Length: 220
Ligand code: SAH
Image 1 (tube, rainbow, N blue to C red):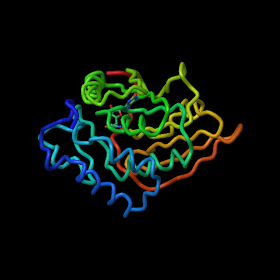
Image 2 (image 1 turned 90 degrees about the vertical axis):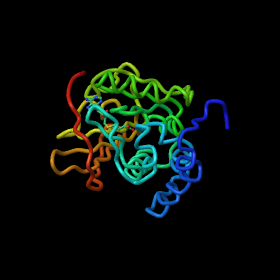
Image 3 (image 1 turned 180 degrees about the vertical axis):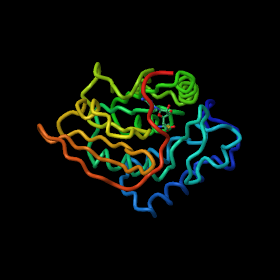
């Protein structure tokens, strides 16, 4: 164990617990080895409140404060697998940093990751969670994800972690040719939407029903 390793709740938060989560993900049909490896490496329990650490590896969404939730492992795995589509990812954008868990996963599967969050207090929490992991290829930004990050676009992949009533129109414009975006879309009834940029056109595919916290405009 490195000097930075967490010592709390070792029994429930060990590599073995994480491996069990990964084997459940395999059983549910996740095949992307890069995604599975990332999920086996990133210590999810460090991203939730200590009181919830024993449930960190359950296939459940959990509260992370500010009325937000960390998404369910299976939903995250499906989103990462669909957006990666077996490609090497160069530059990636996440909208909705939350506690920083998915951003850490993305940093394991892409060369360079940007993640934008609209709630300052949550971004601060994500920084605290991520610090001990010393991830060098991840940049966090405070801002409104509806605008994307035009100054660093285009992206090979964009992952949206909050549900907008309609697909935020600025985001597909920031996809590189061949790039893919995945986002939960809808109000009461939400579906995952996958958008692919093929030369000059965008191809949209509607995937499964999901339940995400709402995407909001502006910073807070
Ligand atoms: N990926 C996160 C999930 C966080 S929940 C994780 O691994 O924990 C969704 C997040 O999206 C919340 O933190 C919420 O504040 C944020 N969000 C909602 N609307 C947003 C917007 N317009 N721009 C940036 N972030 C937004």
